[in-house]
Length: 567
Image (cartoon, rainbow, N blue to C red; front, side, top):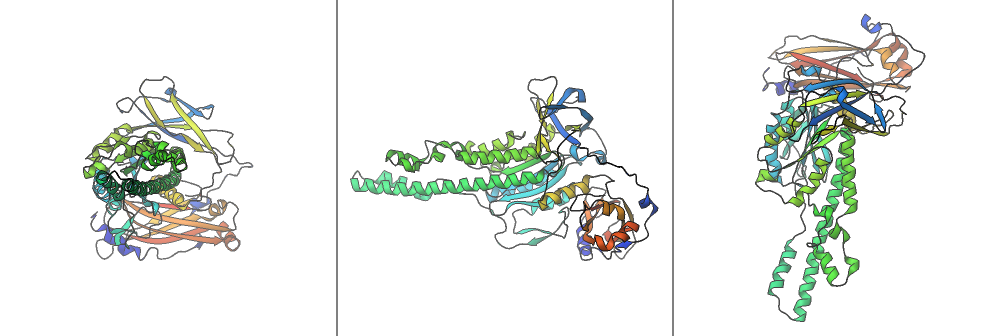
C-alpha cells in the first residue's frame, strides 16, 4: 500500500466511524448455536507464565537450557514447570506464534523534568533510530514524565513502527499528537497545535545560585572590620538559605517523580510479559540521597554559629524518606515485571553529567535487572546492548493450586539447579493471586490493546465476522464489516449485573503490522428488557473501513468492560 496515502484515507474515514447497528438479531449462524456442556460445579485454574533471560559475564544469552535446568519457587513452595518454551529471535519464526509472555515490550519514557530541552530534542531523533534495531515481534509504547502532568501515555504498545515514530517525533514540539478517536491509543492521527505550556520542559535549579556566588565575591573583597564581617556573614546566610530552599524544592520534585513512576509501574503490571522501560533522562542530584558534609553550606554555618536547631540532617546524611520513596517505586517496577534501562542523554548535548547525577538512575536500573547506559552518542549502540541480552527468552509456566482469591502479591524466585559463576538471571519476580481489583482506566486500556494486537482467536464470547471489500471511487476500497455475537454468551459473562455492557473494537492491520484504520463503539443492554431476545439470538454490529489495495488482517475484539470477558 502507499503509506503516504494511508493517513488521508484514515482521516476521511474517521468522520463515518460506524454507519449502523442492528442490535438484537433473532437469526444467528448455526455456529453460534453449538451445544454447550454444563457442569454442576466450577473450578478456577491459575496459570502463571514466567519469562526468563539468562546471560553470561559478557551479557551474551545462554542457549540450550531445558526445563530440568530451572527451579521455580512460589514463596517457599517449589513449583512444577508444567510447560516450557524457548524463543530465540536469531532464529526465523512466525510472529503470530509468539505468545504475549515471550514478546519484548519496550516503553520509551522521556523525562521532561530533570533533562535539558536540548537533550530531549536530540533524544527524539536518537530514539527513532533505535526503533530500527528492534525485532519485528517487539512491541513499542511511548510515554513522558513531567512534574506538572505526571506520566502521560502517548501511545499503547504496538508493533507499528510508523505510529511509534510519529509519537516520538511529536514529543516536545509546539505541535503535539492529537488522538484520532482511537480509544486504545494504537493509532495516532494528525499533528495538531496545542496551547502554550503543554510540555513541561525545564530543569530544576540546583543548589548553587547567583546570590551564593555574589557572597563569595564579596568575601574576597571584604575588610577585616567587625561590621564588614557581620555583613558578610549575614549575606552568606541569606545565600545559604536560598540554596537550601532550592535543594528542598528539588527533593520535592524527586518525591513527586518517585510516586508518579510507581503509579506508572503499577499500570504496566496489567500487561503480560516482560516490559523494558527505556528511561531517557539526565538524572537528578544524588546528594539528595546520600548527603554531603563538605558542600552543605547552610548546615555548616549553623554548626559554626552554634545554631544546632538549624542543622539539616537531610543535607548532611541524605533523605531517608526520599530513599524509601524511590525504593517503593523500584519495588513496583519489579512487581510489574519491568526492567529499567536508564540512558544518560546528557551526552547527546555533548555534556557528561557528574557521577552524582547518575546515582538515582543506577539505582532504578540495577535494582530491576537493567543497567545504566551512558556516554553513548549513538543510542542505537545502547539499544543493541539491551537487545543482545534479551535475544533468548525461556517461558516457564507453573500452575499454582489452592490459591485464595485475595488478590495478594506472591513472590517468585527462578534459579538454575547448577549454579554457574557470573551467570545472571532476569525473571519475573512475582504475580497477583486471583481477585485483584484493577480500577485504573489506563491499565485497562493497555491490557485491551495488548489483547487485541497480540492475542489469538477464542475467548468466552463466540463471534462471527464477515468483511467484504467493494471497489469505490478513488484508490481506497470500501470494506463493510458485520460482527455477530452470541447472545447467551453475553448474558453468561455479566457477573450477575442488571445490564450488559459491551465494547466493540475493530482494527485493520496491514502486511507490515501497521494499524491503518479502525472503528469502535460501546453499548449497554438493559438485561430486564432484552434478556429473552438475547437468549433467542445474538447481537449484530455493522461498520465499514476505507482501505488501499493490499493484504490486511481484520482484528475484532468484543468484551465486557466490567468483567473483562472477551472474544
